[in-house]
Image 1 (tube, rainbow, N blue to C red):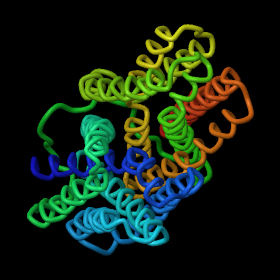
Image 2: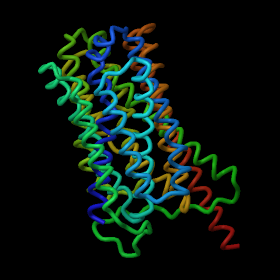
Image 3: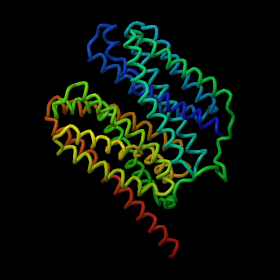
Image 4: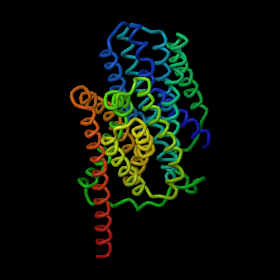
Length: 399
C-alpha cells in the first residue's frame, strides 16, 4: 500500500509539473517557432482542451480495464508527448503533442484521485492533501528547473527530464499490486468525523447538490488559475511595481499554497469537512476584499501569502466532501470534479485577461471578489440543503 501511495504522489508531482510546463518555457518555444503570443495562448488552450477530453476517456477506460493499465498508460502518454516536444517538430505536430500531454495529465489525476477515494474512505482528506502537496511541489519546481536550463541555452531538455520521469512512473506501476477495496481497518490517522451522508429522496435534489459542488470547483479552479496567470500583471498595473518584483507574487502565492497543504493533513484530523470549507472560503473572500483596498506593495504581498494559505485546501476538501456526500459514486464524482476543474481553468483566465485589457486593476479585483462571494454562497446553499434533507429523513424515520 505504501508503494501505491508514494507512486501516486509521484503522479501528482508530474501533474503539477505539467500544469506549468509550457508556461515555463513558452517564451523560448515561441521564439524558436517565430510565432506570436496569440499562438502561445492557443497552445495553452489546446492543453486545456486535451485535459477536458481526457476525463471522460479515463472514466470509460476505468470501467473496463485494470488500474495498472490506466495508470501506466496515462504516464506513458505524458512521456510520449514530452519526448515529442524534445524533438521540436513542426508547429502543428507540436499542437497535437500539447493535446496529448493534456489528455495524459487529466487521465493520471482522474485515475489516481478516484482510486485513492476508493481505497482510503476513512482518511480521504488526509490522502488528498498529500497528493495536493505533491502537485504543488511539482508546480513550484518546474519553473526553477526550466529557468536553469534556459540560462544554459538547454531549455528543450526540460521535456527530456519530464519525459524520463513519466516513463519511470509508467514502469513502476506495472510492479505494483493492490486490491482496490477500502480496508475495514485503515492504518494511520483518520479524518475528523463529518455528518453522515444524506439520504436523497429524489434525483432532482441529489444532482442539484452535485451541480453546486461542481460549481464550487469550476469557480475555485478558475480563480486559482487566474491568480497564477495574472498576479504579476495586477501588481505591475495596480501597484506600479517592476516586472521582476511583480513576478515574485506568484512564487509567494504558491509557497503559501504549499505550506497550507502541508498543514491540511493535521487540521482535517480535528475539523470536519464542512467547518474547514466554511472557514477557508470566508477567509479567502475577506482577503480578496482586503486586496481591493490595499495600496502598498508589502501589504499586498502579505495578503497574497494569506490568500494562498486560505485557499490551499478548497479543491481537495471539496472533492472529498462531495465523495462523502454521494457514497458509491466515487468514480463519477471524481471524474466530474476533474472535468469541471479543467473547464474552470480554461475559462476564467480568459475572463480575467479580458478584464485586465478593458477594465482597471481595481475593477478586476472586484470581479475576483464577486467570484469568491459566489463560492461562499454556493457552499452555504449546500450546507443548508444537506441539513434540511437530513432533518426530513429523520422525521420520516420518526413518523
